[in-house]
Length: 328
Image (cartoon, rainbow, N blue to C red):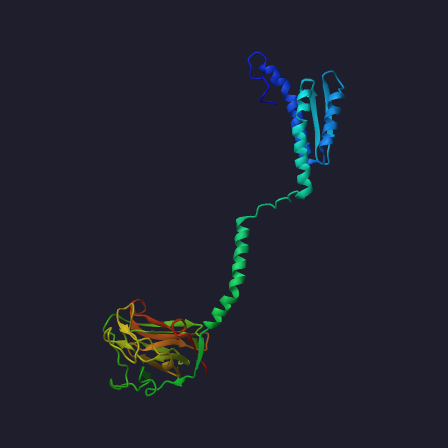
């Protein structure tokens, strides 16, 4: 009906359009009420008749309908009464459709209020906690599988005979004795010798790595003759990369030479007691000095750059799954 009204004509278009607006408001209000209440077609018809004939002022009436959730209030002009009656057929069909839909479909409950947005940091923390809790059993199982095997070693007293495969044991000798095989056979020809006193602290009787020096015969001894311990393995330096020994695979160190990793089953521990020192053959694997005291001073003879360019280490715990404990 709104499209058929001659509002677009130049002479009376604006006036007719202004008269049409109140009727449109009535139609929209009735359609909205029919869709959101329990009105039937008869109720709408009676309400329309009552609103159009019970004019409280000339040319105008007031229509008020209160539903549980909405209040319909519109002003109907005299010109719009006829249009409202013509719309009853359409409104009746809308009412039947809405009434049928309400009988066949339950009215959905009002949406619950949305919770406040959560911060990304909290979500990340909770996600991290869930990931940590879910992966904790797996991590613990993997950790148990990777637990190193602890090997207990009993020390042997260092004597010139017992320590011969690894170096020399040098004890006191009378003044005036000539140089001989019982003296330390040194090789300091590959650099500047360094003789110094080093203080070591908190070196308990256990180790999981071992080191060798390929270019010097190192000497170690405690000042004051305190007992100390040294874990050792035989030298395994190779002349070339292709040389093999015992079925092992050659490894090249950072210093450039090749060697075979030490066998954990061949590691042994020596106890050094009294006023004597050890001279290590070039390439002898050694772990220590270790001791029971809180701190011990040692005299050390090596090259000035030994700990910088000639310090090759094998890690038993990482590469063999073994750690050593000295029991004495």
